[in-house]
Image 1 (cartoon, rainbow, N blue to C red):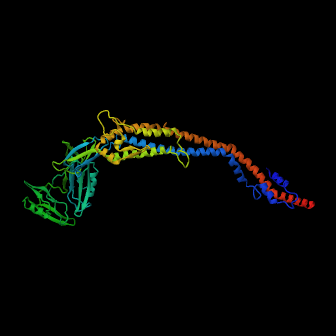
Image 2: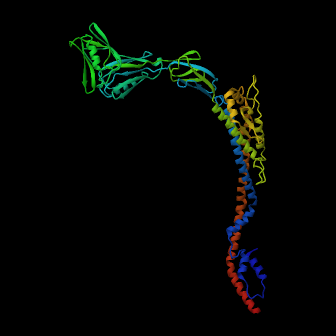
Image 3: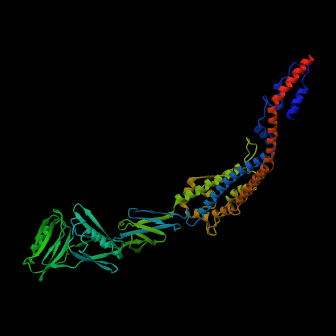
Length: 559
């Protein structure tokens, strides 16, 4: 009804005998509110709400589709996790193939085994460990002290040689170590310093006899010779050298703990025509030899810069299951197929270490327990879709989805797998033998003690149950049944989710088109109409005043 019609209707019903007219009532009737005027935006929104009735139905359908997507995605995720468990249990290098090695003499030998290594017991006797060839130099005052001129030859086991010249730029221990390391000799030189001075230590880069090397030096000849300095008060290590003068010679043996003075006394007692003395200077003390007559030359086999062998490179010697083995390294591979031995010390004679290779029961237990957990997650999510809710008076949003119903059946049927070996017998023919039982709702319960006992005592049967003779056991069987749901290209989940998304997209397009093609036009029309009515209402007070004046005049004339 228009504003004018509303006013006319009210005026026509006014009692002409009344002394006055209630203009406020007329304005309220015209505007439809207690005060004059129209809220155009609210009026348009109210009118369009009714027009959007079908749109709200479509939006409700989208809400349901979103809930279905959420529920189906959760089931897909849980089922995919179960598939991953089956793939892991069916891998030749998976948790069921993982091995541990127990040693009866872990202080002498430990070991690790590759996945799939044949389980069994082995005996290992270690006669000696592999060693690395090493030499060390005579003591110098410090790493930077100037060295006397000398030369020596380093010879590797393979026959490679290098002559090292001290002097002409190689005048300190630091420079000597750098020079050796720069020649690719298969050795590493380092400077070792302590409170007594410094030495160069040379160690082979590889252990075993093949990495051994030797250091030799030409004897020093002259009418005088000086040893490297020794810190005052320090004792000598065990050593020996030969002195020759004319037709006479003598081997001077040094006992560990002797002093330079002791060596000098020994030399002077040999009647070689050589005089020995101990000279002290800022660097400490050194042994000085000189021809007694000052002109007869003598020869000393100990050069100005001598080396001592700390250890010879040697192979490890051991016996594995009665077979003698020689190894350049203390890490021994191949002696037992799939097993790596780490030699730590010699074993007691007559008491070899006993190694036991077996299934890694911890990894296997974890993997099987994870399967039970993931299975329960999947079946519980599926079951929830078919559980009636009194609060909603309905079942789950996927209760009518045939793929979910089919999955519930497939999950339960997969548990009925029976392992029948092609030959022989087995202690594990079904899941129940592993302590895995099925509840009335289809979920599983795991008896951990039963599983642990089976893994410890019947590991091969457990592995055969899941993997079969050729990866065709329980794990493969369940995985095949789940593939029709989880396959990313054409699985039931993919098809279902694509269909839901397609329907949702179609509804979105329908809603958008409805808003564009109908609601937008209606909003324009209604806005114009209510705006015009608002203008009329704004003019109404003036008209009412005029009417009031006229009614007042009429009342006076009728009285």
